[in-house]
Length: 159
Image: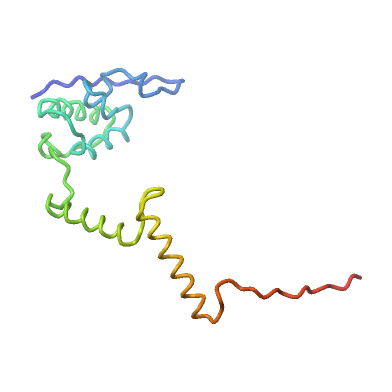
């Protein structure tokens, strides 16, 4: 079992920035990930444990020990007995094949509907398509595009 390195950090009277915090406040002290300065930060670290990337199993074991120590200090209930119960990889509920298929479908939709970034060809196609649609709607209403008739001014009597 990894040894916990977490120590409480309670600096009262001044707001502390993340860069001012010591390494001992973080769940992953080497990478300075997941600061735990109060109970809500501890709950957040538990919830996001499996979302942290680029860390080894040993670092996860140490992070779990740090989270457990911080949870005890701040009175946060933890039902997990080990870090493997919190997870090693993000669980999205979809397989890699399903995510790829969804990404391809989204790309086709963007291409077809003409949504894109800034001045892309897809954006231009979308603008052209919208223009044609507006013209069709105007024709179906019996007008020739924009309304060309002027309204008569109504003058009010002054008292």
